Structures are given as structure tokens and as C-alpha cells.
Amino acid sequence: MKVIVLGAGIIGVTTAYYLARRGAEVTVLDRQPGPGLETSFANAGELSYGMSSPWAAPGIPIKAIKWLCMRYRPFMIWPLLSPTMWGWCLRMLANCNAQSYRINKGRMVRVSSYSRDALTDLLREEKLDFDLREMGTLQLFRSQKQVEASKADQEVLAEFGSPFEVLDRDGCIGAEPGLAHVAQKFVGGLRLPADRTGDCRMFTLALAERAAALGVRFRYNVTIKGFAMEGGRIVGVETERGRETAEKYVCALGPYAPIALRTVGIKVPIYPIKGYSITLPVTDPDAAPQSTLMDETHKVAITRLGSRIRVAGQAEIIGYNRKLGPHATDTVCHVVTDLFPKGGDVAKAEGWTGLRPMTPDGTPIIGPTRYDNLFINSGHGTLGWTMSAGSGRLTADLVLGRPPEIPIDGLTVARYGQ
Ligand SMILES: Cc1cc2nc3c(=O)[nH]c(=O)nc-3n(C[C@H](O)[C@H](O)[C@H](O)COP(=O)(O)OP(=O)(O)OC[C@H]3O[C@@H](n4cnc5c(N)ncnc54)[C@H](O)[C@@H]3O)c2cc1C
Image (tube, rainbow, N blue to C red; front, side):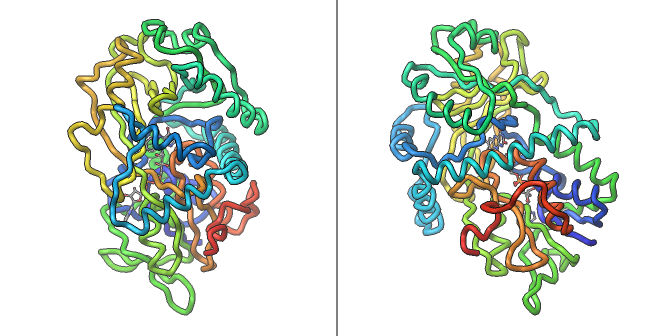
């Protein structure tokens, strides 16, 4: 079976790897000179199975207004004249209710739990170097109000069987000893001990090498224009270097998936939500984070990746804008300096920006389309690294006609009437 995977981000590479493992002849196309150079490049590094929740939740519209007013704000929306953008925002708002939240959370937990198990299997089979740590995630509360609000999350975690620990100030310092320097700045936390952390780009690169060793052909510097269709079937991928053909096609173009898919009439509500990160060297390992810490106030994640610290966050609605302005990373710089003042050297931080491929319901789009030889694996939003192994394995099974190991209802593009 010849398969073309469009996109060499974390999602395209995991898909290609599992397809090759199952015997397919795979070609991956990407416009970049290597794998994982766009959204998968410098994310927060959390494999956050416990925090697999949609952003669209009850109470979010009010919180979003408050966030807009903060100095170091986690959220920003630009008043663009874009019907696509406002249409996406309305669809997201329509999901901010208890019933939709429960349905969407259930779907996301299904994919992320499967991904956790798939990654466990994968790491047994392949030796991959990506600064993995298995020390959980700590959500840090700066106010008693946040502690109280977390009780609703704890109920949901208990319902979905995700292990968690409620920590007081000393408990937080026990989990993250570097916080001892700023103990007066927080009151407690919620720890998710089953979460992992690791560098998504390093993993993507290492898995692409394994995939290449299995025979996957990576064609870089190839810009995709769309699909070619004849007689109701997909007959190729149109690129700036001509047409590429196979028997089956998987669209794993992250935030750019809607652009390719609309050339064959499929409308997917994936919208780019811009985020930022910095990566800085650790100066004092004991004063630096040991795993991931999520600052609930600023919605910024601080992750230890070997001898580096990655600090990521912010959600900016500004279309396909990938510019890194001079003050763009002020929020992430502020949070790491505030919580780990002696841990790393912010003066040596490298800034980055990426576009999360977000669906309005938070759930990725995985599975078949109305064309029998076209599949989608895109729209993983804030959790593409977390959900990558399961999404890749699931897609490979579906493409090759094998029975999927988890149900796909509610995951495919059919939920949008497409
Ligand atoms: C600030 C930030 C922090 C994050 N933190 C986390 C986290 O801690 N944990 C987590 O699980 N997730 C996190 N994410 C989300 C995660 O990074 C994404 O969900 C994931 O990287 C998406 O992967 P992808 O392969 O779908 O997209 P991408 O990595 O963007 O891959 C898509 C590929 O398609 C290629 N492409 C696009 N258009 C074309 C074209 N026309 N022609 C050819 N090639 C094309 C691109 O070059 C790219 O390589 C974060 C995201 C951001 C922005």
C-alpha cells in the first residue's frame, strides 16, 4: 500500500512511522527542510494526559475578558476583518457549556489515554533521546480562589480515572524544590503524577530517523498546493514541484490542514491560535524546575528539558501571523523569573512562536473523510505532543483497514457535517 503523508510535524511523523511499521510504503511531504520545524518545534513539552481538556469550558468567556485586562496576559484577540476567525470564535463559545465540555473532554481523554499507552509501547521498542522525564505535572495556585476552583477539575479527573494529588505549599515545594525561594508567592497546587515531559522536536527528529530506517521517504522543501481529484477520488497531491501520487493520503498539516482540504471541498474548523515560548539554559539545577509547572494565573507552563528550561504559553488570535515581536515573550519571561529566579538565565533565552491547530471543541480530527482514500490527522490544538503516539497509531490502522484499537465516533470530520 502506497501512502502519502502531508506534513512532517509530530503528527505526520508518528503517522508515517506507524504506517511503515505496518508494512506500508510511505512518502512524507513537507515545505520545511526537516521534520518538526513549525508548531512541533518548541512547545511546552508536556505530555499532559491528566490535563487533556478542551479550552472551551463553562466560565471561559468571563475569564477571557479578565485575561485581556491583565498586564502579563495569557490571552489576546485582534479585531481582524475575518469571517473565518469570528465564525470559529462563535463555534468555540457554543462549546462553553457543561454538556459540551463533558462530551469533548471524554473524546480528548480517549485519545490521550490511548496515546499514553501507545508511547509506553513505543519507548519499549525504540530507543529515542528526547529529554524524557516521568515526574508528573504541577498546577500552581497563587490564590485560595484558584484552590477552590480546582475542586471542579478534581471531580472531573476522578470521574475519568486520572490520578491526582492536592498539595499545600510544602507539598508543592516537595514536588518542585526550586519553589522554596518564592514560597510566599503561592498557596497550593494540584499534581498529576502520571504526566510526562519531553522535547517534542527532539522526539520528532528521532522518530523520523527511525521511520526513514523503516523505508519512509521524506521529501522536504516541497510546498503543497492542494489535492487533485478525478471521478470523485483523490488522485494526487499538487505541489509546487508537480503532482505526487499514491493509493491513500493522510492530511497532517496541523494549522494549515484547512487550506489543503478546501481544495477538495472539505471544510474543517481548524484555526491557528498563536503561542510563544522561550528556551533558556539551566544555571542552578536545584533551583530550576524538575518537571512541568503550570502557573494557573498566567496559564504559562515551565518545563525542565535536560539542561534547558522551556517556558510556554499565551493564546493569541491573530490569524496565520508567525511574527515574533520585540515584547512578544515578556509574559513567559516574567513568569519564569518570578517563580524560578535562580534556575535559569533569561538573558540567554531563545524566543519562538507557533500556531496551535485548534478545533472549536478541542478534539482533534482523526479518521476517514467522504473520499475513501483520504484521511485526516490534524487539529490537535494545545495537546498535539500529548496525543501524537495514539493519533498516529490510530490513523495508520484506519488507513490500512485494520480495526482501530479505540472507537472513532466523535473524532472524525463527520461531527462537523463534512
Ligand atoms: C506555545 C505552545 C505550547 C504548546 N505546548 C504543548 C504541550 O506542552 N503539550 C502538547 O501536547 N502540545 C503542546 N502544544 C501543541 C502542539 O505543539 C501541537 O498540537 C502540535 O505540534 C501540532 O503538530 P502537527 O504535526 O499537527 O503540526 P505541525 O508541527 O505544524 O506540522 C505541520 C507540518 O505541515 C507542514 N506544512 C504546512 N503547510 C504546508 C504546505 N502547504 N506544504 C508543505 N508542508 C506544509 C509544516 O511545515 C509542518 O511541518 C503547544 C503549542 C504551542 C504553540
